[in-house]
Image (cartoon, rainbow, N blue to C red):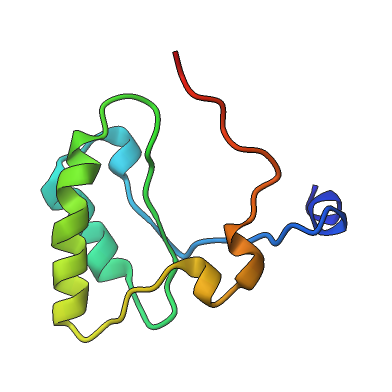
Length: 95
């Protein structure tokens, strides 16, 4: 799969901090796990599908506030990996 993606001009990027937000553990747990897992250069994975994402949405501003307060800078991935903003196909809208 990685070879096929590369042959198609796609760049594979992995993450090193994954939130348990998919299990809906509460915003406090999501914030704690992301903030304590971050280090310089971290890529954070949060989930935006699979049902009610209210806890994730609630956690994001708190995560950003905490990380910025700790001196981190937050930037879109395509600033560091120029091809990261490209996708092979746009996701189909859910009905």
